[in-house]
Length: 148
Image (tube, rainbow, N blue to C red; front, side):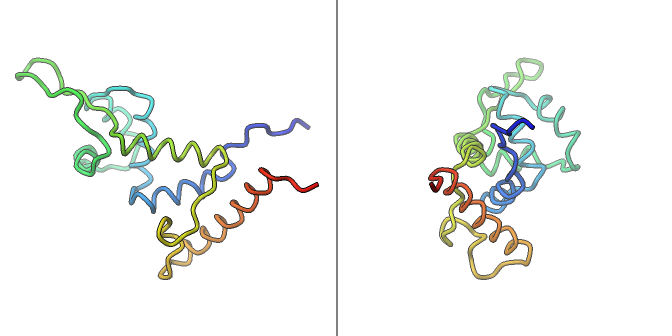
């Protein structure tokens, strides 16, 4: 049997939950930002094209813009002129790069100050994810420093 050299998605669910809680994003918001990450610039039409696949939220574009996930690249000209163009903000790019680093084996922080999933008042499901983060980090450390 062939070995899995690139097993990036093994902990995707745990990383995704960590990101959603840390940045207070919905699953649909995160999916949208991941889709737009490869688009250098986009207009509302491109946003709407992918948004039709997600849960209905007619305020998603404006909310993401107001929260600093999307920023204006080019303002619109006069009516009938060129369209406004947008891009992901530095905040979005940093968050997505963090996701890729974690998928590539970076540990998830376990400190209360950096990870809301390690605070005292948690739901049962957050405790389950917290325990999985601890196990995931152990495996990552072991892979980095295999015992003899």
